[in-house]
Length: 344
Image 1: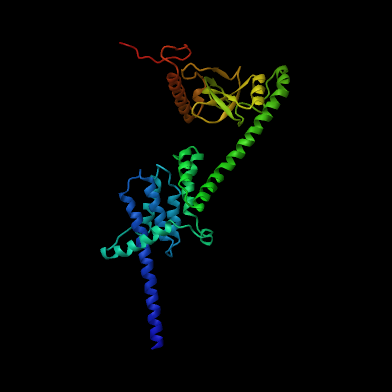
Image 2: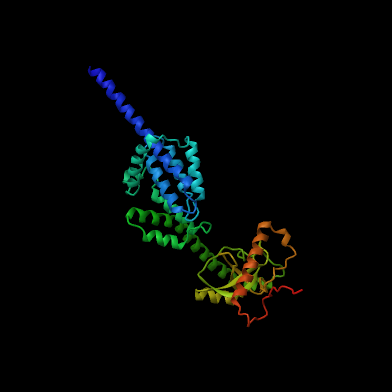
């Protein structure tokens, strides 16, 4: 009797385990299946569903499911959840899709309620060492504000910090921000040092270069990557930077008085291409000319890649629109060419 009872107990435990696994499998699938009825523009709702589905799936034995769903979550962006939604639905199809009988729905709902509450709880240290935090997934979403090619911006960071109710959430945001910001700050520091070295080089070699009959390639030129804190002016010019055609740009003034005076004494000026964030140091006499609003004339323009030519035309159009909006109609200075429709 005891042997039979033991076997029966083992079968019962095995059945319970199988039933639990089935319940978990159906529960996360139902969550992801819900994405079919949610518009892509509801980015926050899509994110919440993904986090909840991952929480449910982690209770099962298939470790690949949470990993695949987490990969989908990491592509989520504020206002741009289409890719995350598509990837999540692809994961659902990968693991057999979702089909559920009516009598199984209550069982699934119980799992949903449990997962919804657990998704809000802080993960303990031992668990977080084995699995990526879902807070980190949200933080990764926000790092787009430092890349320039995502929809996240400074406002997203401010809102995320204001909404922090737990130290773990705030910590995840700080970690993500530091991960992206520190390399950029180091690069800015390096580029600042490069600018200082370039100024010293130009100051010590100005007289030597003037006495030479043949030009020697400079160690530092307009293409050198530099940085300094600047104030952008409303003076539009065409700037010539090595490897680029003549490009619409704005004159920038260094806020550091020593750098400002040094560049002025060298006849050099800081410019920033219209539509770009990078700074360039150019020779005011040879590499700067007034911007009239026309597309720059360059007989070698066709030698540049199509992408460069396209960006040049977009920057020219952008500079023209800015100038048109900044000059009063009754006070044109004649430097900007106005496009007028010919009357017929």
